[in-house]
Length: 118
Image (tube, rainbow, N blue to C red; front, side):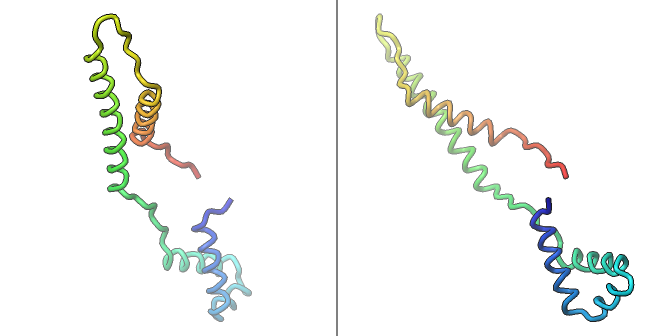
C-alpha cells in the first residue's frame, strides 16, 4: 500500500509531466530514465514531512496523569490512617478505577514505541 507521501509524490510527478514538455518528450523516448529523473526532481522539491512531535502536550499529559495517581494514593493513604478500631478499610471503587486507569495511561505514554517497518 502507498503512504500519503507517495501519493503526494505521484501527484506532483503527473503535474510535472503535464507541464514540462521536455520531460514528456524524454518520457516518450526513454520512459525509465525519464521516470528516474522526474522522481529525483520530485523528491528533491518535496522532502518528507517529519512527524509531529509535540513535547509540551506529551509532558503535560504525563504530569497530569502522574498527579492523578499520586492524589489517589494520598487519598487511600489518608483513609487508611484514619481507620480506627475494628473498622475495615473500604476503598471506593471509583478511586480504584481512576487510579488504575491513570497508572495504565502513564505506563502507555512512557513505554517506548516500536519502530514501524516498511
